Image 1 (cartoon, rainbow over the protein chains, first blue to last red):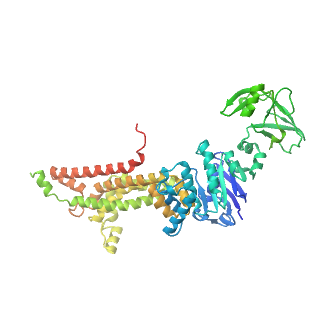
Image 2: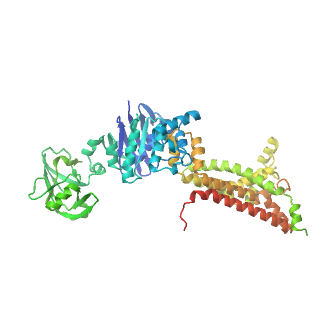
Image 3: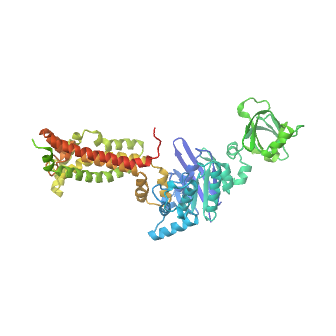
Length: 352
Length: 234
């Protein structure tokens, strides 16, 4: 039975971490911006950050429990920690790095390490120093060093955030392949919603040391619950709303009325709308439409961001962002700028 | 007045051997003590660090004669520790080679400690954390990961320590004295022959010391410089 339970409370200066992560999922994601406490959470689980109170239990084994005065050193926790910079030992060859965490006789260690290097396809690099490897090879070496110790839980601390676009995607795919037959639980922390959407079965969104929202990854993206969580999942447009009755509300920041088929959940104070869900409307105004008052266009190689001014607003901060992909782009060239943007009911995020 | 060749031929080489031996032993002691102290100190918080660091660095900033005087107070055969060592273990420090070693160690230790400490502080702490999560013992992490990673800084510190220990004069003259063939180091020999007006012998020793000092600095640059061989020149 795979199960992680981590109830972590600690303070560092002004920052307080109060987090509960409980999950039986194979792949757990923790989404948060920098300084949200996501790395600290991982380090607390691994035992390289001191916890003030709470408990950490992996698969029924207690690693930390402040009430029972249990606090296993990191050496005894059997977690594998993947550092952002890999933290390969710079003066040791690849194979010595992999052997570093093994117990037993030398011959046995060499055998085990060699098998793992072969499995990860870097056996030929065994005598190189980490500094002589490419980023991808370093990642493999670091994974080999972790996997060879057969950890019960692998912690991935922003493994791709130092890399750029293409390499990041490639290395993530490579890592996923390598970790395919790993049997334990994996936790990855990141500020990248794309990485975590791809990676995790269950997602925890954290901010200022607290969990804002957790659940099955797709459902968290579909219904983030709060403005902060929605923003972390990539939503760009928000408006305060005034609910008139069960099916109508006024989007105060956008100056429009919204009529919905479905019932508006109780306590809805804000709505969010993702930039790529707007539907362009030419001619007559339909329901749930925003008049298009263009401020500027931000061009990217294959898509464009249109920034619009909501009715009755003049401030630069309140702009609405519309994300236009290439196929829609052709339509706009044909017919000119649309007169309105329609909000599709199912895509409106109801937030508290 | 004797000629240079005659002086060289009849030169008593014992000061060189005493200095080299003293330097070597003091360096070995300082090396381990320095690494140990540096490792302990970097784990402390800011306040404790400043205090302990101050105490450990004191021998470097004190005039060596002051350090020598304090050592003499501690080890004198008329004082508790000196009496204890002498009666119990038949060990005497004052006016013996042991005195040379202790004086040289005390004076050179801060160099080892400070260099080791700054080398430790510059290594990526994730290396230590990685070692821990991999299940390596703290001892294994220290000797197999931290010390090699801090290698150039430690090597530089070791060479400086050796150079300082070998050239020690002030504290050594107070504690060990200048007994030819026993505690008579090169530095003390030079001071002595200059007092006698024997500038030729002094000059020979000065040249030897210069050569050794230059070799030490050259060695440091070779060891520590390798890491920076690709840095930009400006």
